[in-house]
Length: 275
Image 1 (cartoon, rainbow, N blue to C red):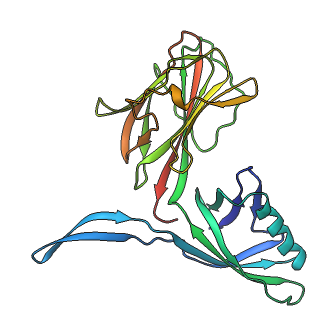
Image 2 (image 1 turned 45 degrees about the horizontal axis):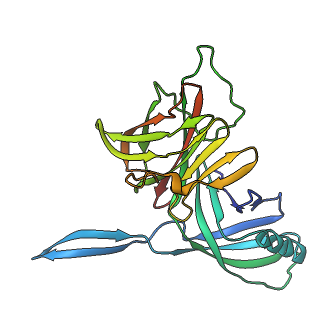
Image 3 (image 1 turned 180 degrees about the vertical axis):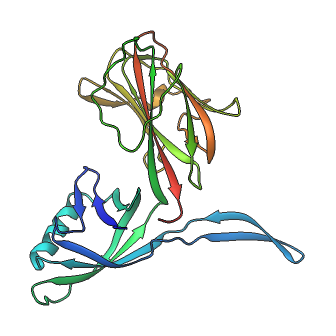
């Protein structure tokens, strides 16, 4: 099984560790996990009461086939923005984690190549994306939207969709409402019971509304005519609004509040301990 690794910065630019960049990666370690576990003792028995994932390290050896020039190209990539950097790991599936680069050594040239030790701080669980779509009030012939969708699709019925979080932790949702909305709502149900609600007191006839529940990047924004503005204050503060899905199955319902066709794309980030 071939595995591939690459970095992606917040602007979406990628640095591949292969012959495309002339930079190879080897001697990987730290792709697993560690946990800080807290227990209560009952006589000769222990009961786990908390589990936390601390920052861990991934170490590897980078071989710059182009020598110092390849090393400089890698530094130029990092200069584009290293906050919010992602490390992707691909085999038969794709996972990524948020990282910081702690250190990068610089050695002498050997036969025209440069080998450097890199140490990476892993700032999140390994994450896998599931993308779902909900179309509400569509016409019978269907509607075409000019978007590409990674990973997998799910069909919706009457604005409702069934999703499954296969990860080990609650999964944050990134929600994109595309089209007209008027005081839109999203409900999450478990076994028919509403457990979480997003409600906005906001109307617009076109454009998009984005709501990110990713813990280190939470926001509520309106995008229309090329202008992006925060509509954080438009939320119903009695509701959760930044939505998460617990491990297991649940139902998500989208109510745009309008009679015209509106599209909702939901990206769920499942968390895994290792890859």
